Length: 142
Image (cartoon, rainbow, N blue to C red; front, side, top):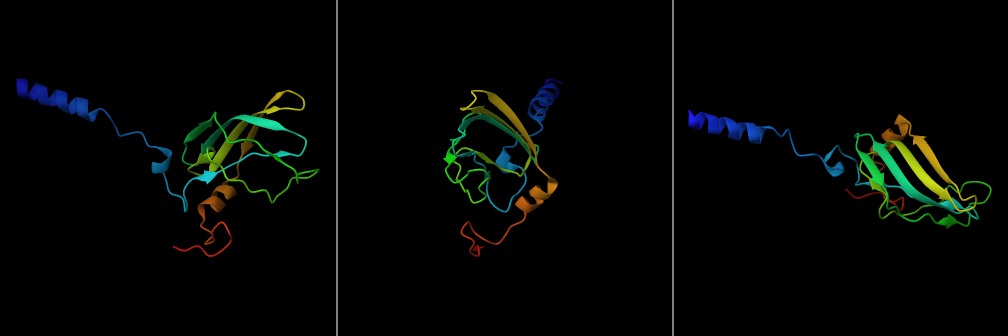
């Protein structure tokens, strides 16, 4: 009887955990590693991004309290410059984004703002489809 109770306790204790929590890297698959995001400001309209949160398509929530810098782009005047490309060290996520919230401080008017972005499902499909090209636009080697 004592053996049965001991076995039952061992089974209960070891079987109570469903599984280890998954990290963002372990959930789902992408045709590449993590995707990066970066912020920049137009010339003469300086701001600092202080917080960003992302909910991705794998239902993983990312909170970024320490972000890459928010540089100004001298070529962004009157209209957004679509040619800006920046590498991120800290701002990375595993799956395509569903929603993003950004808190940023305006240096000009000394106010804090919150911006929310909802991404279309078509963007997630584009991010999940390999292009066959590398960052330089050349055919990627597999």
